[in-house]
Length: 284
Ligand SMILES: [Zn+2]
Image (tube, rainbow, N blue to C red; front, top):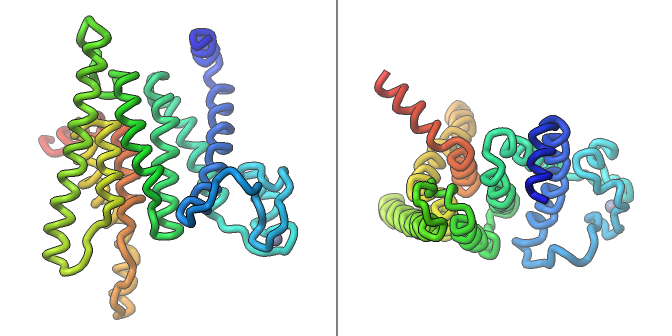
């Protein structure tokens, strides 16, 4: 079964990418429901999707991306605005699905289909409500450990002749990644809180970094924190600068969870290449 699918994918790369993009858009549509409901503690299964005015939404308005475009961002029932978050999340998830398949070997791409939607979900919840639900965050950690046991190549463990040994080493690398991710954010948070005199990072940041460590090992956890800080500063910079120019105090916050999610995803997709490029650049 999987062999037949892989042969089809190798023979028809174009249709495979289109299909995965469409699948990603549908997953993105479900992520939108989760982003809207999980931080409020609501069920993501029932009731069916409803407009803010209470009217049920017909299925064709729920088509990923296309539904929003057909409606031009306005609800059919009451004319209320539909957030651009909906098509944006669907488009990003579609690109992420097709892109993972394009960039990664098939087994690792299938792991990416679990990891990356979880990162999009956590980032979306933080951006929308500044509230990261614990359940998907812990699921990220648990799924990373499980995936490392099933796919030792996630942690680069393919040397050993005995598959069981590869799995064991891979699980160990995953656990070490969780430990490093937890410890390093805990320290940064503790020192940062003392220096800044206010809460520097949240518990959600610790769990997220541990989760990236579970999937990518300790190097991934470090990159998630420090690469994420760079992403955060770069995205906050325009706001800080424009506040400076207007002579106002900058009151925005650096969105840490989304920045760390971006860094974690980058590492999963292209980590070793990033480090090589960096070495090349530093040493000339
Ligand atoms: Zn409505």
